Image 1 (cartoon, rainbow, N blue to C red):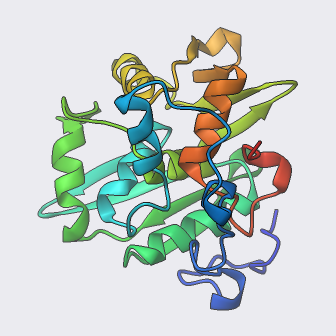
Image 2 (tube, helix red, strand yellow):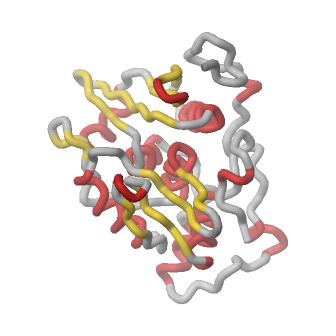
Image 3 (cartoon, rainbow, N blue to C red):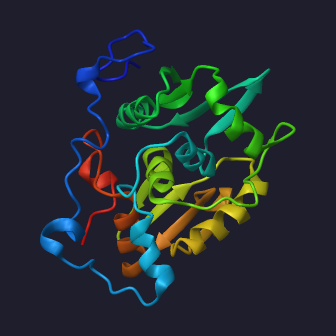
Length: 239
């Protein structure tokens, strides 16, 4: 199956016109227009910090890619280099992730895989070695003790593996067969104000289900506006 917008042959660097800069064209969230307040009133300092760590609060950084590893992303090492890869289920996710990687100085390639899915991967590079060192214990992926979720990390996780769950939920999918990651990732979600229900493989997971008006509003606040390539229904709406 060919990927719409790319042609029939995978390319290492898709045409720039198809990949607008992920932040340059993103509308300013409602909380910044005219000094309006967010749709919820923070109860304490921890809540107020959630806005500070939103996706638009800092410049893109390689460390943000830990958000892909919180989901189904994988990292492997080769000598003094490392490569990051993730399989996604929709063409729009390829568009968004290639643009996000480019914004961090990383060229990416893609190819179709089984089940109408697509694999997005970087080249081996020394730039990703610290990420691999932090997350790999032998060949096993596990979050470092200091792992936390910022808006940019959540944005990447959602772009790779976030799925709306009607009528009022959102799923953040995890890596299959990576049980060692699931609990610490849930702790990081709770620390970000996004406590979720862990769904096992037999319940439509593995994934964390985020529900509740307040938590969904926080998720929308943290990840920012939908990327241009994302269908509006695939992204948490701002209240």
